[in-house]
Length: 509
Image 1 (cartoon, rainbow, N blue to C red):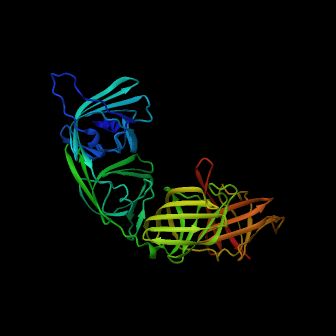
Image 2: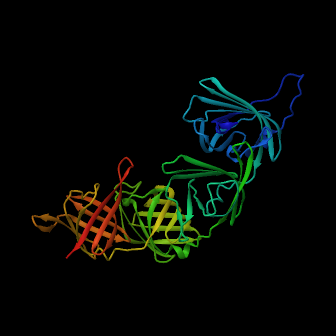
Image 3: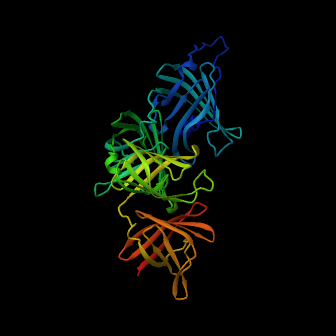
């Protein structure tokens, strides 16, 4: 079957034709009522009487007699087929017992056409068997043709939603695996997941060396793929044999190099997060969709208790709202926490309202990870909606008091608006304003900038000022110790690349 099965399973359209034989000398196959019995989810389990390994499986879902979709992951032979298709739509037509599917399975090869014919010989409520033929053509020329007998079983469970949880491995049996007993997996609603390992101190830490981690669940089939930095993409395939609120069991049939097969099993337990006592403290956004958050997009959430909190954030542009910005300096917001769900409501001005929802998948002494939904409304009208997943790190220092006073220093890297090679001086006052000084000969004199406001929350420093009628803003993450202050910022270029800007200064009398 090789990669053809994957190509077959994801073809773009499906047409079913009659299998009636007009030759009266041949027996006529009775009508098996395929149109009624085919509705539901089906997974191939046998090819020519031999069990299919889990990495050769896919899921067909027939929603109706005219509409369906297919999910498949295939990645063993990258040179001939490398597919990741979750719930791809197919058109369905049914006529008699024969099913014909035609499509272009590879979006990178529009001249490739795959035709597959399922001549169903038996079907009931739990399985069907078919004589199967596939033909592959490129620009109309046949390049491959195969025939086989396939058996499908009906899938009665769908674990697409129940898997959204944090799971900890409790046992492994069978052949080797990428997973081990020192593993946690958090699955998110947006099709990504996080892999956690316990460090030498006994704390769970998310693995940061992966470029991406994606998964899909369709029925009982779980497919994952990930890429470690600088390495080839890796994939896994599992069948979820059991799932409850407390436990999940994966099973897989693996094919060895000599053609023999081995069974494998991994057991997981759901992790109770105990959010309420752990949420208290200060948290800063660290990752957005698995990528580091630029400093100008960072936010600080401080939970004084599970019902009382405040929020600090500076933004010179609100998506969906022209000529709008946010300056939230320790702004209180409403918070409601139920189990692992957290809802926040913030109203920075009388016209603008922000509503955030977090479905927390993991929280410990260092990190918090959650599916995140945000809506921004203006005068009751939704102007912006977004969903993603966010990671936070806990902030153990707060430099709001330490920054008071006068500081002098220079940029120590490229990429800052202050990158002129000169010394700079700021005086930070307790009322949330600052004075920026410029050199006049050997003397420091206040600049003619106006507004000149700042706030520090945790390690985040945000400033804004007006220069020649134009408002400017800056964002830094700071550290203060022994009379010195260090600024660091992750900046994002217009092309999406990033760089780091740094500043160093000392306190002066």
